[in-house]
Amino acid sequence: MRAWNLLYVPLVCYVLAVSVLPLLFLILTAFTENDMSGAISWDFTLANFGELFYDRFYIERMFYTIGLVMMVTLITLVIAVPVTLAIAQLGYFWRTVWLVGLFSSLALSEVLTVYAWQLMLAQSSGIPGWLQALGLIEVTESWWPSFPAMTVVLVYFTSPVAVIVLFSPISRLDPSLAESARTMGYGPATIFLRIILPAIQEPLVRTGLLCFMLNIGSFVISQQMGRPSDWMISVFIADFMSSFSIPLAGSMALMLLASVLVCLGAIFFMVRPKAVAA
Amino acid sequence: MKKLLQILGLGAFALFLYMPIFVVSGSSLNSSRQMVFPPEDPGFTWYIAFFNDPAWVSALTTSIVIAVCSSFIATTLATVVAYLLWRRQSRLHEYLYRAVLTPFLLPGIVFAVSLSFVIAALGIMGTKLAIIIGHAAVIIAIPLVTINLGFSLVSKEQIEAARTMGVREFQLLPMVLVPMIRPYVLTGALFALIISMNEYVVAFLLSGFSVETLPIKVYNSQRYGFTPTLSVGTVLYMTFSLVVFTILAMTGRLYSLLGIEEKRH
Image (cartoon, rainbow over all chains, first blue to last red; front, side):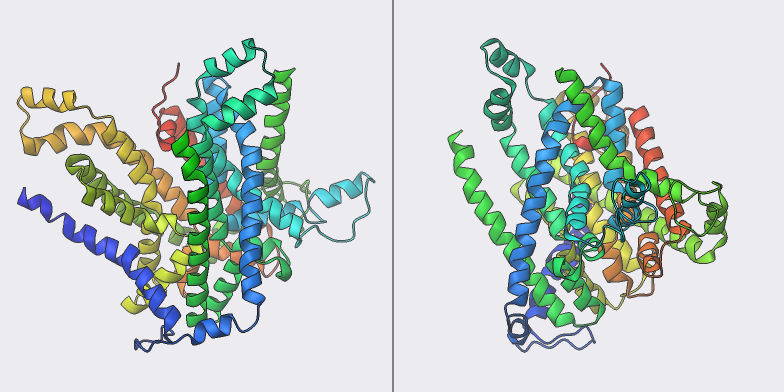
């Protein structure tokens, strides 16, 4: 049995290297003037945050980012729930075809997704051009970068994830529940709101959280599909990293993490009492 | 009526999901540098150009090397963690499990920035090894979920039966457990491999502008305008994913990625 315990050595090293140390280094970088140049300084300073909070720009960006990603998550769920319900009712073959398609599109890099959408919204190769060729509208430029384009691609990015994560709880729903509600004379809207939604409340919250995390942690879509005024906070973090303003990037990443944790805490307290009561 | 509505709804969603891929595939067939759709004088000119361009081939190779290594490391570690969790089932092991999942649960940019500090301190910034470590940390969640599912399906009776038939304790792992969880290990490893090939944020921040994976190369090339080679890269990636997931579906393993066991009815 003792030989087995040796397994813990690499595991603990691994957990230290990728889970514990990164967060420690993040905090260290945010509160010191370390810039990855080598020598580690331990002098505590709030200078980085002073620079961040110099005016209200980044605070406002933070609130904007959270609001935007929440809205995108809601849209994603509103699309994903009926789609998943419909896919779960298909036969084995078509259901599997759908899942293969969803997994492939989920796996596709956001860089490639963005590229595909830029082509599709471009005047020369996409929808604006086709509509113009049909004589429907007069377009002079491509539809990106713009806020609507960015929002659509953010939803595009998370909707296959949402359907896949919702698939197993939704396909396990007992069909006799909806069936008996129907015989009792309830309409489809009532059945959906009063029976199906409460039954998947917990997975729905979990899926929402996953989509929220995926979008808030990614910067490519926002940077490429939106105008600078549409950029999420992650775009600025990536910019600071590329321009070697490391302490600023660190403190901003810490601010993002703290804001996300506050949101999670709020959601947890909003959902938990209901879940316990139910 | 309800049926029709469902089919229309699903059709619209399929269009939303696959229209961009369709446009990209079309544009990759253009014969000139012009990015038009539908393609003019379609052919495979740009596919030949892609494979004749050392920069693109090297980006693709780098992506594959990183994906294979990180998927291997992630799957090995995930197997060990899942095995220990299954065998010991203690509070401590649950903490270990959660600690291993942390990088996946953090917002991508936060994890990438944090890890880059550790990577810089280790002095391996801008190496393939750095990206392999970063990717392994993120994708380990996938094999962990599938292998956990595999272990949860091993019943006490099966272990008991093996013991009765004379299987010794140290033979239990190679003779009973490994064959039972092997499909779950493979499924998790393949999915993790695909995610690594496509991952951008972590790779970008650890690349130190000196390693170029295919997504990084696509991102950098976009700045100099669109060329059909970009479309070729996208089509190759999409095709690879489709092939892998189709194989998983045909061998009946796709559903274990959802954390459920589902057989053809």
